[in-house]
Image (cartoon, rainbow, N blue to C red; front, side, top):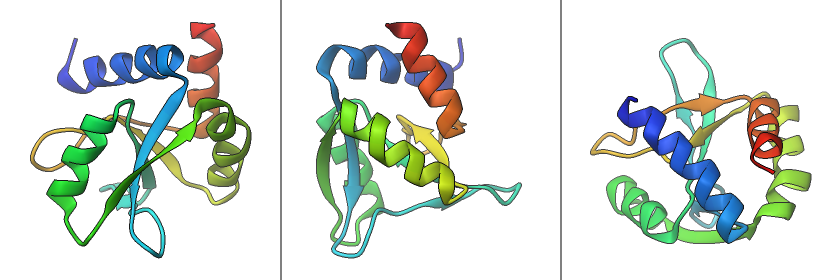
Length: 114
């Protein structure tokens, strides 16, 4: 399995167990990333430590926050879908890379883990 694949698998395993999703933000919003194909992703992490590493890499006075999995699934993912964004999952490494999924793919993977 690739590094990105193992990070994605860890995300779904960890959030099902902890019931918490982590993200980084500043006073305005959470940062997004534009891929080479023009799609924009909003990243989330499965642990505080992973999100802390991302905040440190990105800098810009970002802070780590958490959200209950139920709130993320029921409120955040529909909003992200309406905005046409992808969901970045446990991005890692010095350039914060990894897989992104559509909000519907994330919901399907969460349901499959139930």
